[in-house]
Length: 186
Image (cartoon, rainbow, N blue to C red; front, top):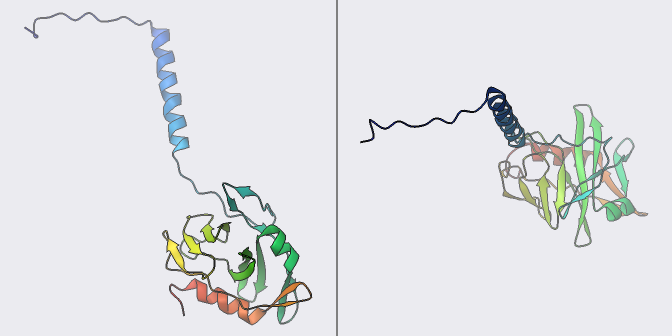
């Protein structure tokens, strides 16, 4: 029964077929671009955005005051921005740090995610979120919560507040940075 039936073909003019083909190519191209999943670039100090997106606070880049043995940043800048990043140039190259406020308490930590090579974290309530891989860390303790780089906790930097300035030893900053480069706590 099926083998002997003639099926009528619908005849579509050539220009319409070409248009339909181009529309199909356009849809495929848009789909590929939309699904590429390319991570956003790590912010640099010159970007200094400090913008708030979806409840999380991106870090504002600031310039610390640096002398022979000490590094300082203004307390009011950390309080106002709630999340700042700064860098320290050492003999081994640039090292990056973050200072942020959670529940009225300032925390200073190394700002590096070794596996994904990020130097940017947003603050989402009491969670630090890597701007590149979205690994989450407890902002109060520095411990990993979830994500690909969870085994690299963020080491705390001891500091003092002197005359509305957060003052840190260079040696403490460098030690915290090195501790964050290795998985687990030292």
